[in-house]
Image (cartoon, rainbow, N blue to C red; front, side):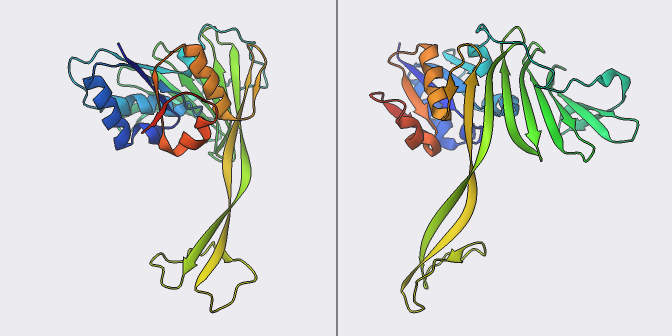
Length: 282
């Protein structure tokens, strides 16, 4: 039987019509398919699972496995979490209030000062999906992510409401991977003519040295991109490029001769770590 693996790095990827069409085509061709929810923003995993259920696959389809990084590294060795790695407030001593987030039940825990300390979101079957911890200004500082067996598998740490670090745990609750996000300054240059139908965004600045009567003018935008690095606590290997980590993940899965499908948004950067391997996009 032919095999295929979809490397899904974000919830935006699983929402793409091309993802669904590629998946349906392979399922109808009787491929053995693995969909790897490989996002290091672990809070997207439960959302991606719900999105996947909305895909109308053929009723007889049985050859699709939906897994994530915690499944792959469940049995790998790790180290004990330190007290500095995550917060563990005792929520049982706080007042709790039942509510809903959309159609899902949520319990909010409130401190003596009247501020929300945490909230826990539950699935339709009453299993925990995540618990979010907040600071005094209602900013997210940590998210604990739980699997279908109600076991903690991932911890996300936030700074100024931005995801700073993700901790992947094995089945014993030990730390096996630490993913750290960094902001990298980025410049983008645009060339526009006076007849361009695209309005000039306010954040663009004209590059110096250009004449007023130039038909084509260049503008520059300042921004930042997020890069993710990883550290293994099994063999202490460091990955300065998240694509190198994903390459190792695919090697660990031992899917020889499987067709690999990568989000087209990440295709170029992923290709350099998969030499000699046929890569398809979605």
